[in-house]
Amino acid sequence: MSAETSPQFTHEEFLEHEVHSNFRHEYKQGRVEMMAGGSHNHSQIITKAVRLLDTSLDGRDCYVNSEAMLVHIKSANMSTYPDTMVICGKPNFLDRRKNIVTNPIVIVEVVSPSTENYDRNEKFRAYQQLPSLKEYLLISQNEPLVEVFSRTDSGSWIRTEYRGFESSVKLESIGVEIPLNKLYEKVDWSQ
Image 1 (cartoon, rainbow, N blue to C red):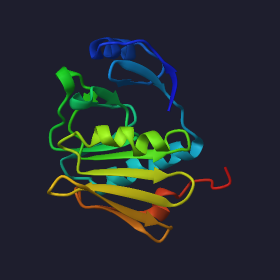
Image 2 (image 1 turned 90 degrees about the vertical axis):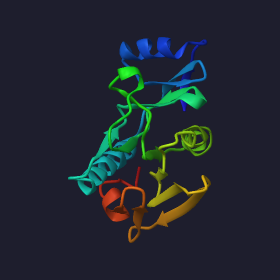
Image 3 (image 1 turned 30 degrees about the vertical axis):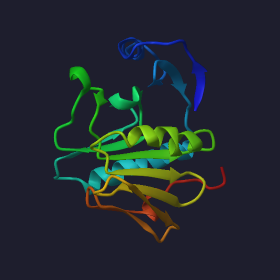
Image 4 (image 1 turned 30 degrees about the horizontal axis):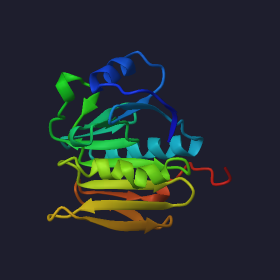
């Protein structure tokens, strides 16, 4: 996940640094870490996910944001860039900053060998602290596989796996279904 680790920073120092940086970074409990770059397949899957979600939510009061928008998790003292997220209703911006939100309903991460452990564990534990979050998706770029972690009414999380091109991911929180054959349409499996 991280290629570079820096000394301790305040969140405000991180935000000021990020505004002037040519690279994306993550803020975790005072540390600023450069985010790893993605592959062609990673990019294709994110692009498809954004398009399929946006089309499915057309006409509704929901917004799909790509990897350029930060999510701040105050209780985890963390700000990070999910690959994709959905916000329904009015976005809650951090301190009137229009590039940092605190209320996603759905967060999507496309996992790679270098990020899977982090996305599945530390990052997911931080995301779980967002009261607004209802569903968390981990999308494989190595096979047609999507894992959806859904928050129950009691606050626990249930994992549902969707595997194979004939499957469709069901996102109950936003009433959307995404066919895996569409999500993986331009993925080059030979890479």
